[in-house]
Length: 460
Picture 1 (spheres, rainbow, N blue to C red):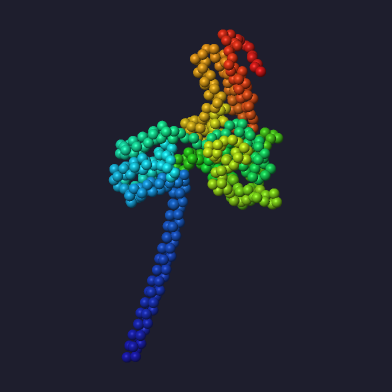
Picture 2 (spheres, rainbow, N blue to C red; picture 1 turned 135 degrees about the horizontal axis):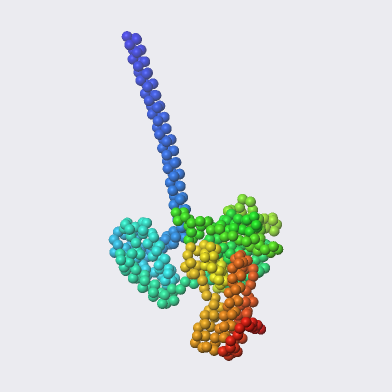
């Protein structure tokens, strides 16, 4: 009896132990599963972060900013007209067309003034870009004039109306001429004796030599300026507005700057001096903040770089400091790009060479920056007048001779690197042209109906 009770007790204890071990194993398994789950969650989270990072990296920020801006304005308009659901939730193409047409027809600035004609197209492009990605209507495309004919007609009609009212012109930033560039570089406020002067000088060099876009300056890194063994520099443009790289491939653009002439202080000297003044451990961005106590400490710059807002006003500040008279509305950091392109055009540099410097992908893009200068206009009018009045032909010949000399000078300029272009002047050539023009005003041709061979004329 006693043994039977003992046996039952032992069995009971064994069952308890087995149960406890089972519970313990279960807890261990749960802990292991929880750790595995946490590990998987962490890996998944890291993977999702990577995916999001690359999506953001592949997105053009200006395009995204423009899209958000116009969608926001569209939704404000829609809410004021009683449209409650978001534009992307509209499922009927006719309803969508009606709302877009109403918005285009009534588009105005906050101050009540009309937009420029091209702004309307930019707005529609942004709205269309958003709807292609977010709309419930599969395959929607507002640019399809057969599916959305009213959108096309209203946009076209309003743009024509604005253009007739003088709101179709795109002014943009204004280029500096050669004399203004030389004036700025020679001005005392652009010397290299102070940290602020040196900063502005390097910025100006970068703008007019590398034809930087307005917003490009903020993204330029110090390591994009690489010194060569011959003491020249290479500027490496890894990406640009029309060369985003990625799937579209494209190569980094390398622009060589020749070494300064012996005994001169040209771009390479300025770049090397500026880079040598950057403190160790500073931000990778090229343009660092000026240290207000640089004279006492000997440290010219802070380790922090300038923000995009302050940097965007640099070209205006440079022209104010050097007293260059250009309307502020037409002056921006992008003026440096226009300056470089225009001066290259004026000196008859081949368009392919200009593209290699500016980074344009097409000749059409380069030509959009081209503007006929006053001398070229005068030559064109002179040619036209000579066809109307034969008595003006000899005057035209004189101007043509001067133009040939100018062309020869331009060919010589092509052999000189662009960075040195702004160190020389063509003022004598322009003065020559002006003097000849003045002498020929209100005078009859003195060599009318005469033929000459192997004769050189010197006009004084």
